[in-house]
Image (cartoon, rainbow, N blue to C red; front, top):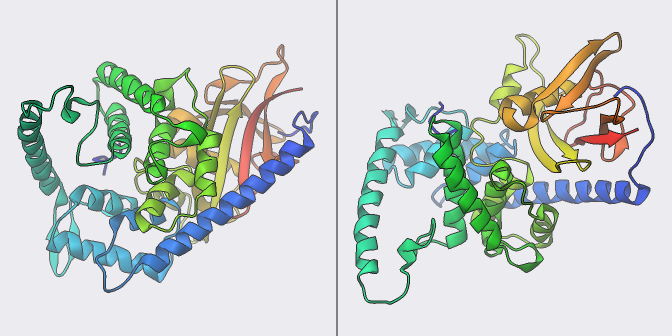
Length: 385
């Protein structure tokens, strides 16, 4: 299944009350938007229309896997994959996010392996693009041909193509030995991507924002130390009234801190469920922020069994994205104490430590005892005392 993958002390509060209120309001608005997009996507699913694997993929990444619409979509996508095997790459992503093996897709009393079909289609596209590229380069148009533009295609929106290229390269970087070359390519592509950012947070156009946000959220290490205004970019998404199902399906993963590189997002939560202790799953947002030195901010959504502790949430986030949400703890008589997150440890001389919040309210319990609620935003902020 690896084919596509790619506070125990209440110290001085240094965050202004107004910022806390704004943070809570933003979290409420964010949660409302996620629910609204999920509802709109479900309503867009029609039994008399072909199933859209992008919608199934977005529902899986957002953790909306319990309804009849999700069950119907999964079954119909299996049937479509067996019958037609079109847009096979998207089908494979949707199936992987549903914890289904694309090598053994069973429907209509048949079992199909989609991987050889994908390889065949990739070979065809590479061959066709080579021929078309030659015709465009020799067509007497003058100047630089679109085929020579970095990671673009004249048949697709350049921003969408570029974003998918970034996701593909990150996937390859995580699953190959030749990382130096890929690192250089990603640095070039992501910086070019940021150069193309328009004013007011727009990247490409409003319908490209979903893939663009996914790409930039998963590739931060490659354009660092350069920064992009993620808050402004997300504010554009919050302000837009999305109605087109495909656009909603592309932007929703970014809103819940995921991307098309997240394979089988429910797998980690299921591993936390012991035999005889099956509990309803909840979705929790977990963020880490450091503004004191070498700024970074990352956020993700994870599924955990109800009644899980914040430490459980952190462990699932680490399992899903170990390069980002790695952490260290030491055990004390009060329980586990977080000493380091993302390679950044607290320091007694500098009086720094990791402080934990729920919607900007500092936690009064430790990570080993605090139990977040469904859709709660929990945060670890590198702070001073």
